[in-house]
Length: 235
Image (cartoon, rainbow, N blue to C red):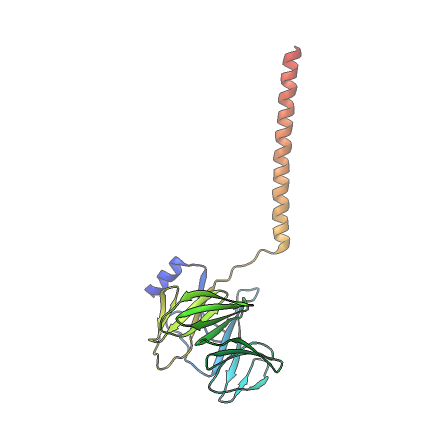
């Protein structure tokens, strides 16, 4: 618990969640076992509950949350990013399969992940994590001994080959590397209630009224002072 206390003391804007549906806040005792169900964080709903989507990978088929069935290569890794829209990583090549068309995204990567909140694709290549952008690849950070990684709303979590799970250099958990090839937990930004537009407008209106009232009071005070000075001069 001491490790998590340090983490939250230094970064209270983060949440550590389990990769389950529904997700739970990680508490050192609730690390989920690895199964053939893959879970992705989609953001929060208006009440602050994590929104999770799942897909199930069998030997040669993949079933997404809409119950669509996809025929796959069992030696490749996949992610479902939208209905009938998949990312496939196989032999160093990352491809996007959408509406039966195939697009090559990257040719020389060891792993990949997809940020389902910010809708960005990341690849791991030669000890570095890169974010893929149109017509360019931007370096993000350098990581040694990476087995799996996750980016949720821009927040990176890493599973190392020795079973250590880290975020920004902080150890979140340690798992048996023989039992986990994927991250069972992940870090993301904490939920923050957004101010409704009507409330923001009312706050702005009150601020304007206060400012105008102060300006009117200043102008009236200046007017009285000028009138008093003029009276003394004429007297």
